[in-house]
Length: 479
Ligand SMILES: [Ca+2]
Image (cartoon, rainbow, N blue to C red; front, top):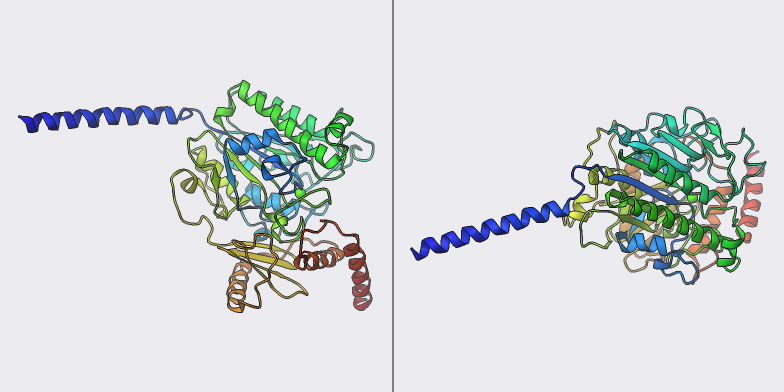
C-alpha cells in the first residue's frame, strides 16, 4: 500500500512538473505563430572602439549600447573583407565573395556582384517576407544589379558607396549613382541623410502591414565626407566624426522606440555591425592594430551585436564568427528553411547560441583581397602580402598584433599557408582590380602598423607620398 501511495505521489509530481514545463515552453516562445522579422543595421567605416560600451569616452551611443546589453555581443566577430563592397557581398550572400571574383572594392560602373549569386533579399522573399533596403548598396550600378532586381521589394538609397549627407548639385544630378533613388525614381530630400534614411525605414515597416519583413538598414555613417548639422556638431564638441556616430545612434533610438511602441520589436531579430574597421584619424580601433583596407584586426574585427527575442542567458559569445553567418543564423532563428542554389560558407549559429553547442562554429576563417591574404585558425592568424615576410600572430595573447611570431614558428606558417592555398584553389580570379597605387599604400600601411610600438594615427600622409614614389618607379620599369 505504502509503495503504491509513493508511486502515485511520484506520478503526480511528474505530472505537475510536466505541466510546469509545458507552460514554461508556452511562455518562452510567444512568437511561435508569428514569423520573426529580421533587421540588419550596418554602419560604414565605424571604428571598433567608437561606441560607449566599447569604451569610448567622448562618443555617446546609448541606443547601440542598449542593443548590445539586451542581446549578445560577439567578442571575436569578423567581416569577410576590410573594405565596403566585398564585405557587403559576403554578408548578403553568406558566401566568401572571392568565390565569385568580388575581391576588389568599388565594382566598375558597368559591372557588379555576380548575378547568379543568391542574396539574403531573395532568400527572405522566397519565404513570403517583405524585403527592404535602405541607404548604401555598393554592389553594382547597372540596372541588372539594381536592388529591386536582386531580392528587395523596396529600395530607398544610393547605388554607390558614399555621398554627401546633404542634397547637393554634384551628387544629386539624376545621372549620378550617388543620387538618392526610391525604386528607380530620383528623390529630392531635405535635411540630413541619416535622418531621412531612418524616416523611410519607419515608413517601410509600417507599409509591411504586419507581414514579416527583412530589412537591410545600410547607413552611410560615419563614412566620409565628415559632415554634420549644427546642433549635432555642438553636441560633439565640433567633431563631425563624433557627430555622425551620435546622430546615427539617435536615429537607431528613434527606430527602436517606434518598434517598441508598436510591439514589433518583441518579434524582431536585430543585428548591428560595421562593414569594416575605422580609417580616418578621428576613428579609434583600440585595442586593435591596423585600419580599414588591410588585414590586421583593425580592418575586419567589428563590433557585432545580435539583439533578439529568444530567451537565453548568453550575453557574450567568444568563439570566432563571421558576418557570413548572419543570413543563415537569421533564417534559422525565424524557423525558415531555404534551398540555397550554392553552398554557404556562413554557419547557422543557433545551436551554439541557444542550445549550448560547445565546438567552434568555424574551425578556420579566410580572407583574400588581391595581393594580400590571411587565415585564422584558433589562436593563430597568418597574414601574407606581396613584398613582405609573413606575419604570424597569437591572437589570444596578442590581440593588438604587435609580436610577429613567424620566425619562431615556421612550421605553423607553413601549415597555415598550405591551408590558405587549398582554399584559394576554389576561388575565381578577381573580376576587377584597383589602381596600382593602392598596392603600395597597403604595403606601407602593413609596415607601419607591423612595426608600431604603440598606437599610431590611422592615416599617414608619408605613406601616400612613399606610395606615389613607388608607383612612379613601377611605371617607369614597366613601360
Ligand atoms: Ca565601409
